[in-house]
Image (cartoon, rainbow, N blue to C red; front, side, top):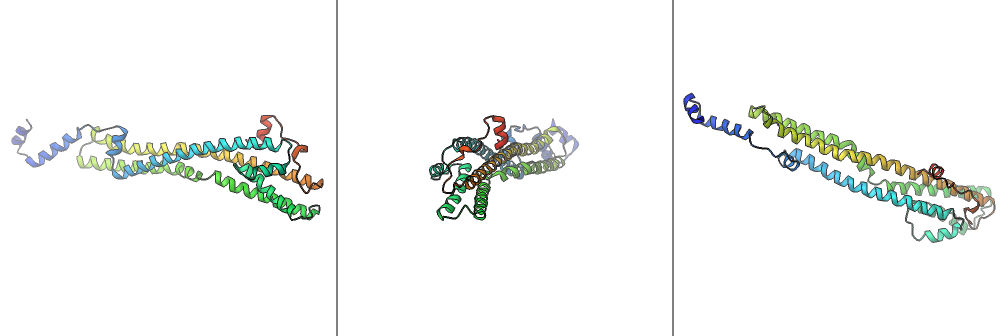
Length: 282
């Protein structure tokens, strides 16, 4: 029938064949699965989607690693605090834990005790107010510096989560704009605005946006949670330094300059979980 019409109208056979092939191509089924949208997308859109998917996988690896770290350090801090407030000698506790520093709170304690031990070994006249004050300042500063180093280790790779959470939607949007631009070019070339021509390219473009959101949303939520958890843990370490400084000052005032007998006479944190959480920031 088509041949009869061509002969009847006198149309150019070659041109009509191209048009017929083009129209036939618009009716071919398009693979609308996720894999099909990826494989049939433009190379630029493919690079965008592949980069976002890889970034999402890496962010999930960081998320699981940080979740394990937070659980471990909080559990270790609880055990150490119970030992610290048990009333035993801090000298003996220091001798036991200095061989194996396993968590930030132990590292802070060891740093302060090491500075104290250095002053004792040098036989400094700690009963002199000026020397005692200088020692307490050095101990406190050493412990604060250790806190900064340990918190920096805990927050390692957090910048990636923050960057991914802020940049991923825009990267996905770039893929979307590129894909939609190609779809309009295809519409103009085919001179056909049917849904079969428009839908596949737009679906590929929107898939790039979806990849951006899939990468960004978990990264943002995880970053906010970890920033809060690490902030609370840093406050816990700061409060521990304050308690240690008070114990040190009290022992120096009482003349116990050769050793620290322990915080047995110092008020222990309350057993009320809510009060303890307020005190140590957990």
